[in-house]
Image (cartoon, rainbow, N blue to C red; front, side, top):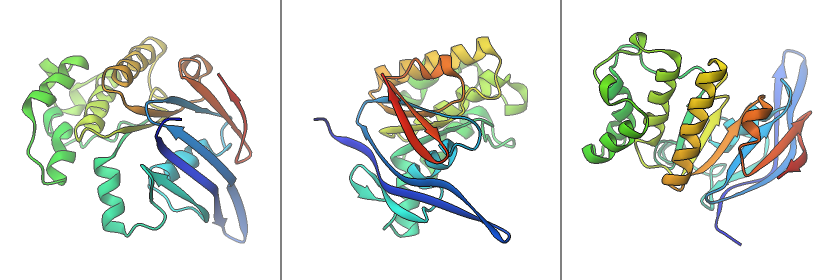
Length: 226
């Protein structure tokens, strides 16, 4: 058995909505091994994005525990949790989440600067070549297409050399052709840089490219497909 990259134990999340409660996740158990490419699928409201946010330490579970590289996020103090999010996990979101006032290069190296690390210029050059961004480094996000902005977001997610990539609907704002290009890049990164990748998607064709698919319904994992 390989090394466990991410583990969820009895993970539940309840949101208070006025006088009512919404149980987004219900006692979810999950194990992702290092180097796996996993797809989380389900209809809107099934809990897949909630699960992704909990796995990445972006939200706090109502009960249960999340471990990343065998370290409990649930028990971490905020400073340590922020360091884990910044250095061990690369996030890619549907809406790109680029800082509009910063250039492509500045967006990419921002996580490194926030970690008070020295920028490895050779590495940044390498990942930008892989992602086809070499001639866009001085551009602003508003000057880029949706696909180009998502490639910048992927480069930013890779900047601190995280072992884990969490991608929440990374093709949700892209057309079919651009979606395929972005997914091909994610698979290339997974293989070339030996990353653990977990992707949330409602697109069956995208999910089928993963090592296996976990299907969520009503806050629970109801199936696993190879």
